Image 1 (cartoon, rainbow, N blue to C red):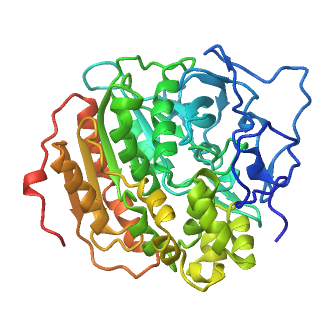
Image 2: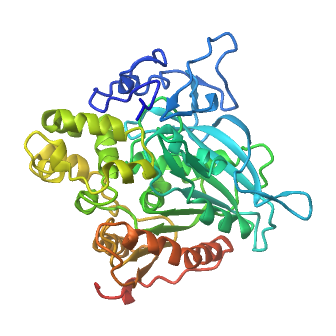
Image 3: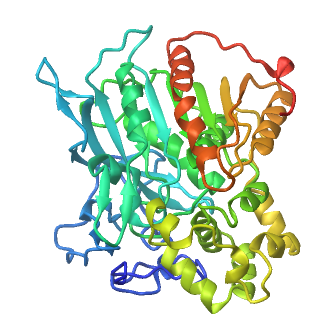
Length: 467
């Protein structure tokens, strides 16, 4: 297989903010925060000066990333401020009877957010203005969608997948599977904004996979950015919902917790969080050796970039084989990872032969760093619907139920739904993926009711017993 990127992303380089260097620099993580140096611009649209030399294109596993995804050297000061927009064709679209495309008109966007280190960061995504009319009460609402696991290569960005539902070029396999949920949400008349998360799409850094703060901030700031998209019919008072499953479920859950402190201006009406990885220690054990073992590589690489304590543990324990695997996986989408690292055990990547979970558990600072990612220590804003398949062995059902209990004990309005299905195969993803489809209709119906202003009835005190 050919080399994937113009710029390699070494996961073990200390992530110290430095000025951006050339796009051909092969020590990718030395660029962390390079394009988010001190200084601000006005909150309106900004662009790289016309006199600046055109950057070398980023090529990820044979896919050229459009120049739109390259952040400028200066960012706006306000979280959620738009940096740039452009029209974006939807890969799955049909003409409507009234001449408007179905399900809507899409706009690619880049906006400013704040990462887990408190530094400014450019995030990309997409806003879709629906063709369908909103039939509920109040102005047209907005749903901020956090995608499930797409990968860590820039070509895996959810906004890119909306334009290119299937990328299959011999080097990469990317499938825009979130389109089904997004299009169903658009059919209700709600507008949709999709975040690409920190570092997925925007080419200045590695995607910080399942980082609680990065994901929550990116999702909430996407909701802010959507209001300023040219032609958007939503208003500052439009009810806003959060929607996500798996990685997206963790992002939406974390955003619901952080909204009161980080984005109180976002009028949050309800949150759907499906199969959220709320306890990464537990999830790490579920993923290790599974069909989705590549996701463990993404989390290791992302946290090595963002957290000095975890980076030190990775540096001290990863083998040459492990370094090569992390670098390779960091350019992959889900399809690539299933074929390339499916059922791999992390013990093959360490110098001691121990799993990364065992290594982190034995290192107090690393364990504490991972524990900081725990979701459930804050009371979420507004009603939340938590759903999980009882047989889920990738994102274990037990830790999702514990999240529900944690929130209930804080007085939150929680609707918890344990999805009862038979065991559909150990560690092969089916127990995790099937609830994504079977629960989708109920999830969208529940969220649409919240966007219509209907009250949600918590089942905290009638929650089904542990199954």
